[in-house]
Image (cartoon, rainbow, N blue to C red):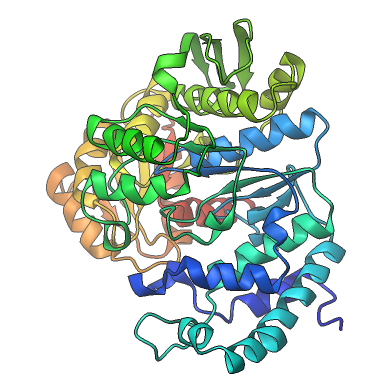
Length: 464
């Protein structure tokens, strides 16, 4: 039966389900529930080989870069990542483009049938399944937005007959809905304290959750980690008999040159039995920042393990074409100062963002900042305040709970009342920040950062 005729109808229907990003409790995370849904769909997650990416920062960039290189090599790539910046279809893509509306609608029809026909029939006959999907059960929950969105992605990939899937976890790893995959290779980026109400309050606890994506006998490409996290990954890899490819031991990045146009660098991969030999690569990516060189290098290591036949031309060509919204993206206008947006919602990512911004545009610019209520605003205020002449605090969209007044108090205490302003309306904050930057004796650069939901709002305000 055909339920949907437009992709927007599919996503509108999905939005009616509980959304884990809007305040779900930890008990809502049950990988068993996703396994039941996948079985009802005849396991679309097995329709093509996959690469699975988790981590606290950089995982979206790694996912996009892998997709770009595989697409340039001629593969039909299904890409899954979050959050989206301007269009929810950014989460479920065919390479760097959207699937056709027919694909989204066909997958939506199948998903709706699973949720409204097959699942209720199964629940009636199996008490164990019923407890998983009952909102009144102690550890049960109706299907969540994230689970159904993930299944929609797998269905799109199968209907479109994709050759490979590149899949980013939503949050954590062990209980994430994407963890029904059995990938060719897993990738884990840098670990930081994040989502502590769901993942744990220590680096070890969070690393343990992320390590849940490591699969038996399948390689793990691991970014540089602190000792606490590294020990967790070593133990889990040993337990799973999974080859551990620790990036600092197998690669070297040199000759890094950062400009407003992007980043040039050289990558040398050392000999490793899991990676096909390659000569040093001279690479360019159109995103400024040393961290993006590190993300690209991590993606290349994973690519060479999963698809050793892919050559230098596809690697270099794919990275040159990469476009990732809200990753140090410059918004241009005829009558505006330099305006950079970058999703940096942890202390480490904010540090790297500001370092790159000040390297390219100098100290003393304008900061437009907002973050969700569960972020460490005090730590980020200490990082940001010394580098900016004026700071506008605003609301990071409405998708997640936030307290801009509290964030303002924190920034004002650390940075001073004179240079800190609270403008709760995001559109008005963007207008005031640009106006202030233009009206000074010397035009100031503006950095919009913090929550991805904030930079999405800035982008929307700027482009309409």
